[in-house]
Image (cartoon, rainbow over the protein chains, first blue to last red):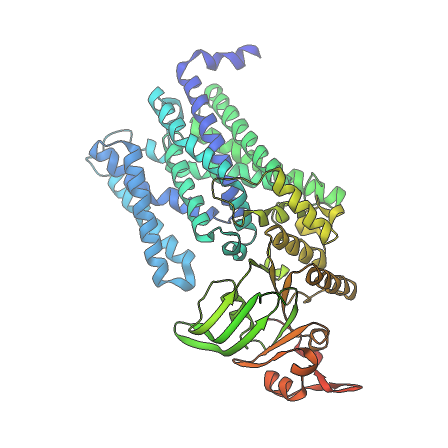
Length: 280
Length: 249
């Protein structure tokens, strides 16, 4: 049993993966709480997929992935904003069209004959391939996100509760929603190396959605969300090591399991005590 | 008398250069309870938006001389949101606080005092969504009090309240006015408005303004609501609307 726990730690790659997923899990779970409360899950997922051509472009041009991702996010956001101006009555469909187009474009680029090998990592991530400099970059991006969330907590909470009250309280609702989406973009950039473009949305939505099922106070929700993300990261990496399966997929699988368990626990609690959450 | 809390002079309000409410001419002294009457689309919401500074008058002037806050209809707030009554009251403290500051102990104390004033000390830790409609309304009033608003705008606050909650809210409004707060209440309840200090009748233009006994005549109500006025027995000069009119926009 001890060996089962200590064996993976003998490898630098596993240790680095654990550190990386701890950083990503903390940021993703914290930002994810706002994604859930602002009902931006779909936007978050769209943003993650929409920046794919940027990532592929950077890989093809030999530029840093973060740079390509940033350009991709800006392009996706600008296009989504543009089509939403013309298709105001069905913003979701307009967004879906843009995102699928962008994602298709990215896949087209990725599968071209000139593409270097390993480009599939952009889709599925390479958690165990995390380097020291990637950990430093992740931490450098994660720190300001956490600081901003801490500073602006009350304003985010107030606007999420009641958009209409924002102006009277001196908080701009548009600014706060934009802030949440920007933090989502930064989180996606942090996570894309580890979990890939397809799985990174899982860490943004999964832990927070599970936590939301179990509590109706914000603070415990955020703490639970972070604990769930860290648990899923830890369990995923161990499962990946021992079962020899892809680490990113294992982590995403664990996130799904935690969500299902939380949903079951919430349903049982409701049935037994007539309550919708466990802490009332 | 103190300087007026709200002064309108020849004010016209609207959107995109098109007027939807004009002829506004009134002065509201601080500490008044003002019933704002009018049909849906009569301009009540537009007036509130202008008072909050969301839109500027197209013509004339609309001056608000004190801090102002709105108490939204509670059916517009989110019941699934993970906050307590105290959390909501604390939100009011954000008004006038620089963006890098977080509400601390002093703000929490102010919010607790506001909850005490609206009679919800015991419910401070309850989830907002678990409270009754009347209690939620009072939490939103506490939020406005925490924001130290001297003028409170209430948009149809009695909608959906049972008789007990309605009486409780009405006495809270009386109490707020006694302690110097100006309360402007958009309502359909003519009979209720007649018990307040002032009434402002709107129907795309200002029909009348003044003390209820002067400003709430039957012709005024007919001009405000376009007929269908029922007389209150024993008060032939005062009318009420048929009950089916009690919906909100």
